Image 1 (tube, rainbow, N blue to C red):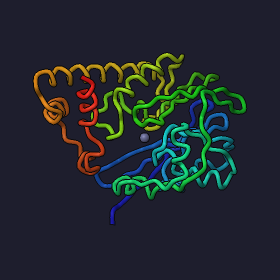
Image 2: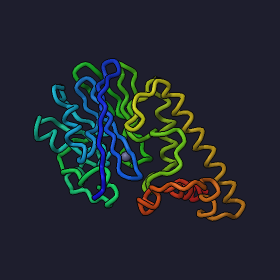
Image 3: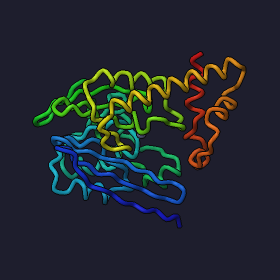
Image 4: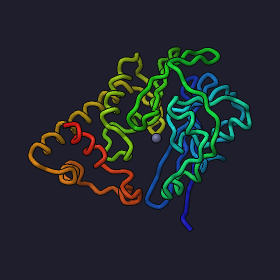
Length: 271
Ligand SMILES: [Zn+2]
């Protein structure tokens, strides 16, 4: 029997309430946050974190749910939230029909995040959103997924980045990620007036603007190196091996759903 350890940390940052969920299985440790600001709940963790998530929600006033994208660690408890509180959940228009369908997930993701999320009815996001006291800009930021959005809270100047940022120097990405779209999305969020970035895997980052710029610079450098190695006649496997020689167990564990090659391939196909 696989041992799974689950933990969670509740905290606040000014008016923001948050929970960091931590899941440990042998060989993998992952985390995901949910945030609550002015009655807006941003993402609902994974189905396997049901108990921890509802501990966070207890005694809180949730009026709306906004999803950054349709991944199981971001929509996992939405169906139960809707059933319990009768509130609406919002997501990018591309995913409105998909939230009503059963999600099919590889076994390794179910090991970490639990069984697939229950389907639910969602409403399409538009460019802005209004909560009790705050106005929000909804910023389409494709890359990690096509339906990804970032949220900019105008009252506090906070930028919620979902899975757009995660780390300044990614070495592996999901097979569906379009790294060129990610770069365009990083450039797009830099046009907003923010310093505090709120990331669903890295938490609250005060110098967020600087780190977004750092990730963009890093990806531009990787892009140039990929193009150079490709010009010298290396194929996608050789370029990946030269730029990312380190072994990451998740590459095998995910049957290469996660790999550096998914970054390299997109850069090479660009040429
Ligand atoms: Zn994601």
